[in-house]
Image (cartoon, rainbow, N blue to C red; front, side, top):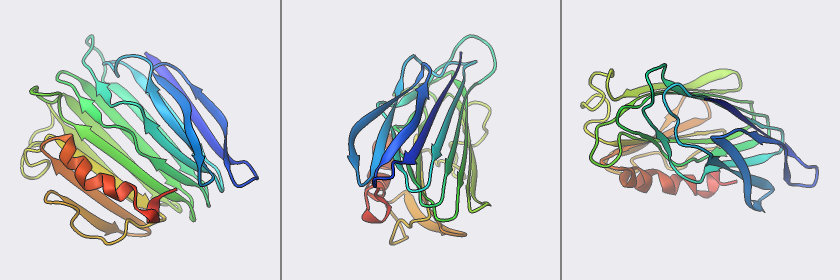
Length: 246
């Protein structure tokens, strides 16, 4: 299956945000939800079909214009599933944030079901003066099953400079992914990147979590846990602090 979705958020000239483009194809269905908040708008990603399945090629493009505030959520976790023999499933997410724009990407976790083979590619470009809060959580397998294969490749640029570049591979074909050098036996991992607005009070956010500044106006929070509840306990409070709220 090949599918794409696009959302373009623009300032409406009255202190609010309008969606100039909101278009999707199953399984990438987009729905505007909730009341406008502080001049912004919220869009939920709705899974219109099972997957991603092996062989699926999915793409989501996000554009936030000057003065616009967009929050992207999802109604449920994304479940990467095995399928017929073929290439890995792939989800490519690209996002651009203009000066004065704000994007909050806070979806539910990706679950790597046993037997899946999935690639997640993220490319985010934030202009000088833009604000970004980007969250990615990964659960390595459903309850009491081994992890499927997932490779997550993320690059975030700010004012033309690459400030965050990370690749994580788990499951079959990724030697040592569950060892001390990577997840240390954890079954869930989460990252939170704030660009253009800090997370406040850098330091330890939990027994298996930390908040740290990166080069430039960027901070990174990361957490590893035995399950997603431990990751959420560490990262969820950081998503709602006033310094990074929309």
